[in-house]
Image (cartoon, one colour):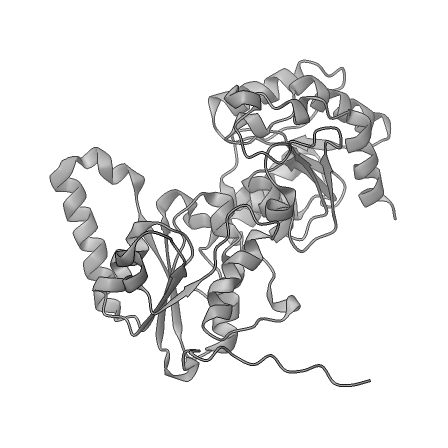
Length: 367
C-alpha cells in the first residue's frame, strides 16, 4: 500500500519556532468557548515553546481556566457597561495595557467580533489570523492571514475553529482535536459531597439537564417527565440539574411535579466546574443543544442530545459515543430560528416522541 501523501503547508505558513506568545480570542457563549479548547491544545503541541493566553467574556472563563495549555485567561466583563462611560473606558484601558505589555507575536481570532481586529491592529503583533469578512477593507487589513468562515456549513464548530490554525500551517491529527475541560479539585470535592448526601455512586446514575438558556431549544416538561418515568421503570437512577435561573428552575419543578417517584436534583446548586465534575461521574447524559451537553462531551460521558432548530452537524456532541435525536418529519430543520415563526416554540422538538429518546438512551447504556 502506498504511503499517505504528507500535507503540504500553505505557502505563507508562519514560522512556529519564532512564536513566543499567542493570544486566542473567543468572545461568545459558554458552549462556543468550550468548543475552542482544542485550539489551545493543538497550538501548544506544535509550538511548545510559546506562552498561550485566552481572551473571553468573564462569565465563560470556567470553560478554559485550568486548561493545561493556557497560561492566563484574560477577561472582558459585560458588566463594564454598568460602570458608566468613564468607568467602562478605564476598565477597557486596563485590559488593553495588560495585553499590550504581554507583547504577543500571534493573535488567533475565532469570531467576527471587531475587538479581535482592533487588537490585531494595535497590539503590534507579527501575525494575526481571523475569519474572512466581506465588505470591510479595515477588517481585511487587520489580519496577516484570513481563513474561510462559511455560514451554516454542515461542518462541526470544532473543525471550523481549527481552520484558523490550518490557515497558518498547522494540521492537527484527529486524536489532537479533543475538547478539554478541567473541573479542578474544589469542584470535584463538592460534587463528591453532593453525591454522598444523595446516596449516589459514580457511574450508577443518568444525568439529565433539560434546559437551555434559549427555551426554543427545549423539550416540553411533560415529555421529559415521561422519559424519566420510563428510565425509572427500567431501574435507572436519574439526577436532574439546571442553572440558577428562574425559568430553568421552574422547568425542573414542572418535571418533578409530573413524577410519581422522587428524583434527586441539584438544580441551581452547581457552578459550571461542578456541573462538569458531576457529569463526568454519570453513566449517561441526556439534554438539549446547550453548554451542559458540550460539557458532558468534554468529560467523556456518552450523550443523548435532542436537537430542534439548531444544526446537529455543527453543534452535536464531539468526541464521545452519542446519539442525536431530531425530527425526521420536518424538512425545514435546522432553520436556526428561535421557534417556529420566531414564536419561541419549536414544533420539530415538541413533536419528538419519548420512545425515540428512550431508545437512544438504551443503545448507549447497552453493555
